[in-house]
Length: 377
Length: 262
Image (cartoon, rainbow over all chains, first blue to last red; front, side, top):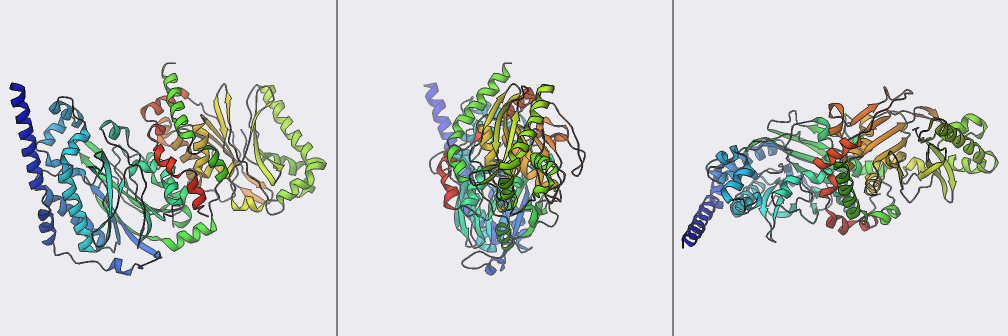
């Protein structure tokens, strides 16, 4: 009987909390907050051709500081994203890119989270749930509320400013019930053109119970043909190769590197990918400290070495790796097409047919075995 | 190990009258001299290295030689064993426009060679800028990637980074890049030979274990390759463990054929 009463109180508590989340995430809160800003639409995207690719586009990479939102969650979040989007649009951006985990500050919807996190987020969740809950389940509980605030905020801002926005990403429950790290592309009418699920997870994300996505989206837009995989996806040449071969000219990487800033380690992501697949790149990094986790990175616009004035592969880059910045610059698609014509990739398809993708399973297994053997030496 | 085109250097020194220059006539030139003296000079070249390998009891990669094949000349490297025998060979598998214009033909296979030092494999010249090559080799078990390289002047550090450096990082193996410097066949070459490991294993996090003093001069240098440390690095985070194989299966290899991105 006691167990039944406990269960009923748990269920009632959960329903109360879900009701609280539903109330806190009303779209009207976001819409009201943004209506008060009296946003003037940009004319920058009017200059983009209705069909075919543009010669050049102006892009903003938002280096966003991740900070836990502790109260008035929906309003505070909308105001933060508004402020950053406005800074980008004021400089003529036609596409505004936010970093990975841009939706994570909304975990502040959990009352008392900061105190829990002070003891270590992972262990706090285990303690509260009695060890039965994974971090992904916490995000699952928040998912309907985060999704409402997140989608309403970015959609309203894209429509109000009349710009394309790549939202970064949030941890959300997917249509198949699995928890994924999901990014959005909004058009200047505020429509969701596509969602991109992170394809290569950090070990931590996998441990937390998240699942990788299964498809890479490549979209035709008035900005050109775009892909927007997420962070770790740029560690793998396969991501950019598939994007390029499917016609992508611009590959955007929302990123959140939870580590100390070390220059050469940062060179293992989007930079080599842009070079080897001859695309234009945008990286938007999360910075700051969220629940004891530091985030670092320099946002920037990238291209093949030969197209960049300093011949280092960067058109422009943030000045800092730990401060909020909005980096704005142009991506010249005409120059990219000319470069590709003068430096064509010459693939050895016969070779790839022999080995790819057949080798992946075996190669992965063999490496694990090799390192297990080395462990015991 | 030695850089690319060493045998061509030997050949042009021994027979300047062959007039072998990089450009449209190079492949034909090799074909022309091959029956009369090209093959024998090349064998002499190999014999020198076989003798040195045996004398000193070391493995030697003598650089590369342009070998006539059915469709042109293949830029080919050799692994010579401490017994003075050829342990393996590899042809360059990707060609740039200049190489195609010079009558080069590409190989269509990649090999990994087991040795007591570990599993060795080669990427030759242009191959270093195609990530497919090192991915295939490391999936086949390569632990040390050897790259005989020759890049015309001017030297670009970043061009080197987008080649061997980043491929070593994304496959978590060791790399040895030996670059040609000086004039050969009408072209001036520059390059900074380097021994690579993952950033985590190198001083200053640079991904470089050891490097030539400059890009324009001759140098000989070495480094120790610590496989125990490499295994530790991989155990901390194994890049291969997070492959998205369903995605690759959906697109490889047909995506190359559908839109060859020329």
